[in-house]
Length: 204
Image (tube, rainbow, N blue to C red; front, side, top):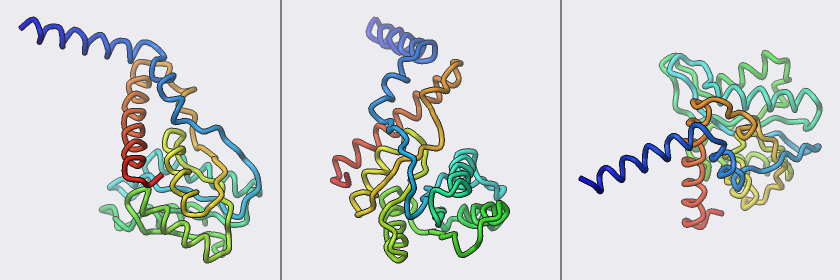
């Protein structure tokens, strides 16, 4: 019973420290890559999911909008929008929804590349690298979440693409409330574990 009590107190203390201090902001730093915005052959926007209703998830929309803003600012002549084939109940894939958004923003269809292969970062980047190679594009502004960037950049660079990081958020600048710090903790644990898993598998 004393052991269980000690475990409970320790877990509660750890949780309270996590949601009331900037602990996870510091622990997240090894995963974060500084932005490096410069002209490139293409802008690559990684997938992030679609809601059952057919709307882009908040993360997917954030990435797509950031990529479109970079395109509108003239950072690259082509924008590549990734989104797996899995469809929502509304019958749209993430790629479909992002393509519609890009066209709504006035991006010419011949300046948009859609990639629908892959449900993991490893498979997704393989399809992206092939699409870039077909267009003789060797440099890419990579748009994804800041905590995903280090792993995604390493995988894409391994496939021969020169990557310029263009994170779509600033997680370290966000946490102000306990809820935000808790969310950051979950994201760091998720992406940290994924990065270590890719390292162990020899992907990066």
